[in-house]
Length: 368
Ligand SMILES: *Cc1c(COP(=O)(O)O)cnc(C)c1O
Image (cartoon, rainbow, N blue to C red; front, side, top):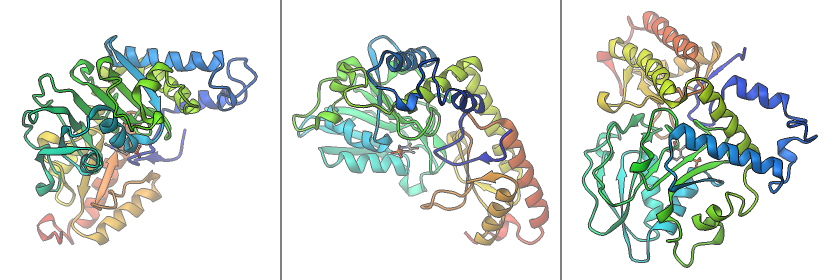
């Protein structure tokens, strides 16, 4: 048993069985006499790991055959550039829904390459909800959404009416947390460090007809077509990360797949939201219909109470509960690998904390 429950927004917890298996294989992977960290990325043994990771992902997400799966580097942040460099022609137009801080960053980056329309934004309400979703702008090359907003704790429950315009999604913080109809998307990307594996690997799922539309100046290393042609080994891929992702996928299948993960995630999130709804001291920040299953954001009435709460949590092994530095408050990131026991322990600490502090500072006397 590990000693802490890590509520970090990422890198975050990995299933314990994955870590202990990896530890067992650290010095000698399946009789190869080598660690996966040492292997040539062109060796048969590594190619098998990569192929299996890919096949498992196709199976787990029910990805149609006309899509390619790529394991890249550079994080979700590099996709903010790769997406326009590969999908937005010179002088083109694209749509970005500004539903959160990462969504805004993605739009800002794309602006370097063309005309970015922001047909909807929830900036005015501190990104506490998903804005109503309009249809695409005329001639838009693609329509970008962020399906889970990690910092402000909201998630999409409906997709926008994009028709034939390719829908591009940053799913960094909710991929594999609930079933997704991949065929509704032109491209999906996700940094691995939240629900997939260790930091350093970025997953891209791209529909084949969108491959090969890059702009002429696109650096070779940023071209989807080359990564697809070389099955993610155009250059040295993040080998160890791909190996851990394969194990995470095996573990997910073992535990019933994405549907079962979704019901566990719903149950975990409900424990926290139900408490927030009856609390006199803690207050959730996201609007109810758009609450994230992965990142539960909330506040206490004063900075002093927030600091005291975070210190007590840490002392009990509930770590990294501080909100993002731009928004403060408290954020419990409860990705797939967070056991329900971690959430139960957190809720029971919140109950105790409230019982001890409510007399002094009822919710009505909030200072912020
Ligand atoms: C974490 C996160 C990012 C940034 O990911 P990096 O891999 O650090 O670049 C981008 N978008 C969303 C939605 C995220 O949660």
